[in-house]
Length: 389
Ligand code: SF4
Image (cartoon, rainbow, N blue to C red; front, top):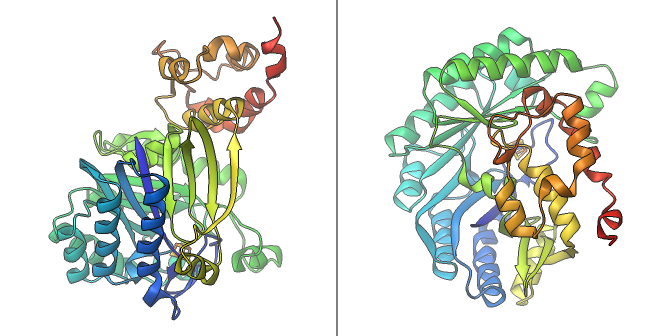
């Protein structure tokens, strides 16, 4: 599977916790989609045979741009990298940025999955984290998405927000699940350096729930969502069975993906070798490069096989299904269990594996909570030991 990611680096206004590559809408926005289409032409020369199974417009807030422009980009992607007939095509959308009509244009233009950023159903909390919308705005966007014909809808929620209680978080989940979205992404706030929220917390103006409170909220969320029919299939992602996000599964399966647009990251194979690369983070440099017919890449690195193996483990263990052992062996020509015996054994002693299906290496719920510690054991593997005759 190959996925295509399209980055739209604009938002109405920056949220207080955000360090994603996005800026408030400016004059470059009107020419950005034309630049994307130019990049697609350049990438087509690089990957003439590429076919895609999923497309994801993320950001930023893609829906701050006219829906017709996003559809134009999608058509260009489809022309260059023919999409599978059942391709999953997602657009991230924030409440207050898409009208009923815009959502209809997206749906009619081939978008079949919409991902709405709510974060919390509590208006005070939304204000505190700098979101530009209210819960009512979200409700409108949700209803319009359904009326526009979307039958695959994700809602993003967050826990660990400033001053947020477990009850408030649970209430948000209850309100959201009463709408029956097909997918829920439930992330914990990460306090990123140099964001306004970071400085407020550092100066004591804002207080975040402590580590234990955040862990309790996460547990509460997992239990509640599973009690109402949402299966946890990745650390922070839950779906009605059959509605797991195929695009994000491409990342967690460490398959190839091509990123288009400012700051977009890619992981692609070229002549049998795997490379990771990223486009420039400067909108102006991006526009200038594609205008001159140049690929707007800022960096490109070769990923050796051992690094790929570790990445497959690191990403694969995020899934509740775990890592398919046969896939690993077919991909790298070695058995995962025999290549990492010390890491497997160590975490066996700690009781962190789920042994319900021998075809997979899978963490149990406690293991998923301790993922970083588990991964350190795999990272410490001495591959040169393994290469000795
Ligand atoms: S809407 Fe999303 S990308 Fe935009 S500022 Fe807020 S968190 Fe960042």
